[in-house]
Amino acid sequence: MAKDVNFIVDGVAIESQSGAELIWNDRDFFTILYKGQSFNGEILNRDIENQKLTLKLNHREFEIRKKFELDALIAELGLDKVKIKKLRELGSPMPGRILSIHVKAGDHVKVGDPILSLEAMKMENILKSDGEGIVKRIAIEKEQVVDKGQLLIEFE
Image 1 (tube, rainbow, N blue to C red):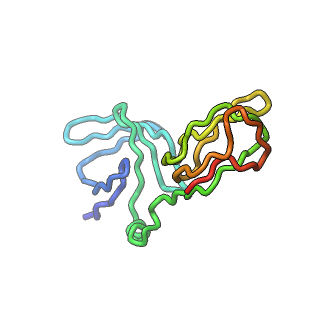
Image 2: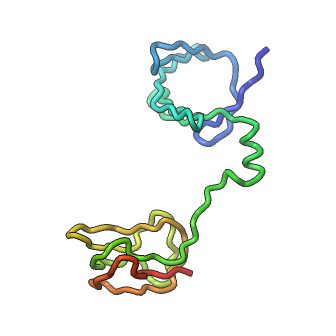
Image 3: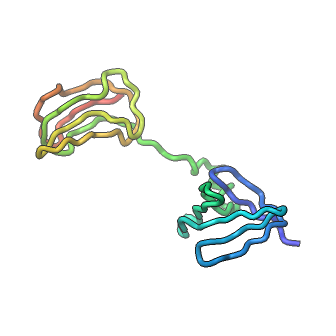
């Protein structure tokens, strides 16, 4: 008797069950027969390097990854946690003019939050946070012209 295989489906550990039949229609499309029901599926993405598949099963998408013994060790060591950069300061990536400032002193900034808008070469660039931090000091003002590398915002 074959040993059940563990998988991670949409981030939740699942133990495989027997009794399902898989019928391949072609390279990407398949049908699963389980307990008298038929489920149509399609492989949307193959990420072989990370051993992940993105499947569409009856119009619902799933991300599936096979669970290995190494996964338990990595989790036990805490290496599966995403490391988030602690912000210290934000410098101007290019010369330009500050159009608007989206934060104020004391605000808690998370990854992806808009911090300010900078106009450079007649284009508006929204600078977003690439880490987390609390705004300590805003070193610029709206409509101020800044140079490349100039300090814009300090974080705690």
